[in-house]
Image (tube, rainbow, N blue to C red; front, side):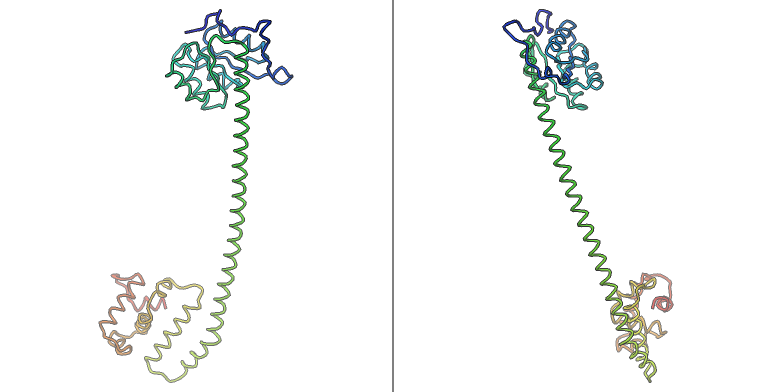
Amino acid sequence: MKMQPTEKCHLPTKDEPLANNSNNGGGTPKKILVVEDDFLTALNLKEDLMMSGFEVPAIAKTGKEAISMATEVLPDLILMDITLDGPMSGIEAAAEIRKAHAIPIIYLTAHADAKTIDNAKTTAPFGYLPKPCSVVTMVSAIEVALSKNKIDTERQRLERQSFEDELLTSSVKLQEANTALKVLLEQRDLERCEVEQNIQTNVSKLILPSVCALENSKMTESQRISLESIKINLQLLTEAHVSQFGGSITKLSSTEMQVANFVKAGKSTKEIAQFLDIASSTVNTHRDSIRKKLGIKNMKMNLKKELQKTL
């Protein structure tokens, strides 16, 4: 139901002074977009608003026009009639506008049932004005809505600023933690290099001379193979980089390492069993385990040759 010309928001009489609008204090007038499909009602609203110190940059007749003008004009507030001609209601238009812009909206309505009001609430309106209404009532509602929107906007700004400050603080702390971690890792690398260097130095000065002396002495074949195994193990301990199977070699048990060295030396399973005083079947079990750890199990590859490349 549309407001008739006689039902306009009337101008104040001599006993009803013009509403005191803060825009009259010399500041920039607040822009009010009027959405009303009744021509005379829209003109009356525009006249009342301008007389109260507001600017009315546009009047929309349909929901589609309201959405377009809201984006183009970016008003400070929208007076939206709930019932509009066309496929889109004022509530639907307000919902689309609120998706894109934080513009406060006050609904105008001549008659509204509970269901309509409930639907209107989903768009978070800043108020409702009945038609007809006085200019004082309309201006007061607008001023309250503008003030509330200003407070909400400032609160959101402060919350956003607080969040950004917290994010910046967290970022700085994270950067500091990363720097500290980097220093710790660098220190750990230095300590690791120092330990490796000490191991290499001690092996070279304290152990290898004795090994070389043993090599020049008379030893049985078994002792010589064992000494070779010791040298290989020392080499694996001190080398910074291992060969292709180096990582796998370090997984061998002490017995498997002995078997591997005997195999590398060309000893048969029977000979290895005699040297280590174990059964031949046990030697074969160790050989299978060695092949598995080297990654060549079930492959037609000569174990002796692979060990000679590895050890």
